[in-house]
Length: 108
Image: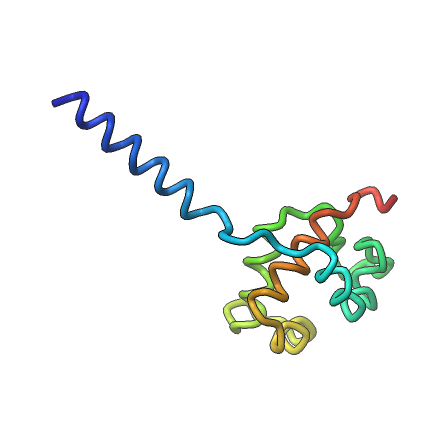
């Protein structure tokens, strides 16, 4: 009985891990091409020159995805970011997030 219990937990663990991974890899180049609007506040290299705006370079990709979707879907309120995110598709958000996550957080 104990062996069956361990096997079931193993299956649940593996299945959970697989479901948490993105099915398709995001396109960093497409994210870079779409990032021009972001640069006005977050900098060309993801390092903001404006103290009130966060650096995006080197942020964790999944964190960026979740935050952008929250802005877009109205779950996170911000009068600047809501309209910026409103027109983004899930693919756009995935690509932008992959791009900013790929940048050096030191700005180099």
